[in-house]
Amino acid sequence: MLEHLPVTVISLVQSDTYTGGDLILLDSAVARPSAEELANNYCWLKPIVMDSPSKVPSGYYLTDAFLRLDAKLNRKLFRPKQGECRMFLAGREGVKAKRCVGAVRYLWRNSHGAHDARVLDLKQCLSPSPPRGVEARSKNMLRLAWLKV
Image (cartoon, rainbow, N blue to C red):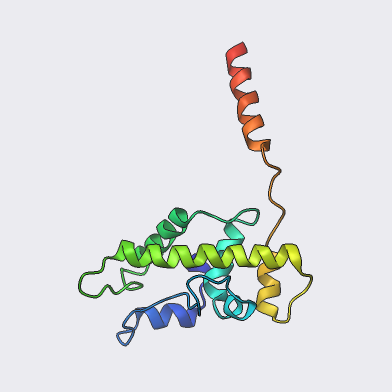
């Protein structure tokens, strides 16, 4: 994730003037993020859709990714206030990122093109989800192959 962040974001986070706060900015905690919100959060979403082009990763996975990014930035990404912890802040960002990736996939399935080049770029990183049951069938076939040996 770090290698895909713009240099300006990295330098801002590592500066002494950075005081922390929300990374992914959304207007609503309930409504699907708009295309404008997706475009505004492009720098955080691009590495995620590149890593998981065919599915929406879990909130736990994204929480771990944000915690790892915080560690790579010498624990400067999250600045917990009194009574908060880094895991809580990373979890909040992970859930918002999951919602945003789901919104990108929704736009990818239901609309062609985009009004914003950043949203179009996010959509171009995606691929179809594997058919349901394909992974389970292949695992069962592997188990059967082991039983025959």
